[in-house]
Image (cartoon, rainbow, N blue to C red):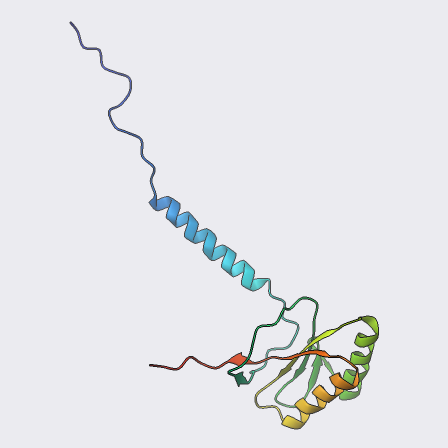
Length: 141
């Protein structure tokens, strides 16, 4: 009797996992970069002071007030005088029922400039206020 070779190969199909892992890491890295880029930063970059008791706050619909190291005031990245800052805070309070303000202060800014901004926010009647800080570095063991 004559043997007729089978059209099927003897090798079994297998799933290559290495390319799958590469694709998964690429997607993970892409989503991480995109999610970081989606965070809205309305304040100007300043060197924030460190605090050990800081907690993350929700950043939906907020206004940023910034005091830089020279004592200049910024309202959502726009430089304003102190009188303009007070006026804009009053307008914000009248246009929104519960405005949220994030107060940024450079660690080298004078305490008086920072307290003046805080006082202007309170005078405007805004009660939802967060002071932005950066966390303390982890202790080395």
